[in-house]
Length: 268
Image 1 (cartoon, rainbow, N blue to C red):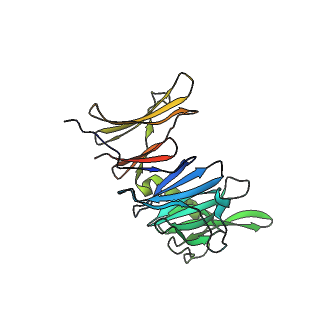
Image 2 (cartoon, rainbow, N blue to C red):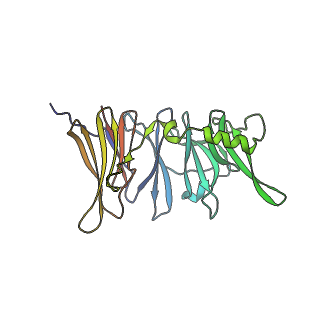
Image 3 (cartoon, helix red, strand yellow):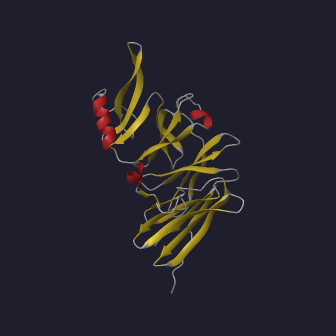
């Protein structure tokens, strides 16, 4: 008998939403950022991956000390994760450089601590490697330190030399490793038309083709031993192919459909 896969849940982020970023805490919570370009608003949503229950549907990042919206409600993003917390950053004015670090509890929907004076550098076993800019002889330089990820306090030991900070950066896990996320690879023979990943005999494919009008059609297929188990359209009529539009974590597939919907499909 042919096995057919079905979605476990679908989360719709609303009219005009674009799902921008997804992350998973080590404790198991799914955290996403959705952006509304017309309103220049970036909101965070959090979900229980097993049930699809929503903890927070649209949270605005606010600094609890300053009482101000982080990044004017638009210039904010997800930096990293630790245990049950997610760390949010803003951006420096007219610069791609990040600014500040705020620890967000995704289940309660609140900021645990804030350090707007620091910039995140790496998530290390000894703490969050951060830096601040100081001026010496009129020239800017970075002063590194470690923060306790749960409390936001400085780890004892004072400033960290730039050479040691570089070693800590090089030894840090990638976010994919930390979060247990698997991302697709591009098929080098496809010219950008096929992404795929193979998981214990199950092949997940992202297929990208142009239509007669020049728009891109991006679809997703799950195949096992040559048998199609699941198929869906991720988007049609797009101006570009939707690369990196799906991932796998803990045996579950997550993909974005029509920019605004997040779909979870258990692979087993």
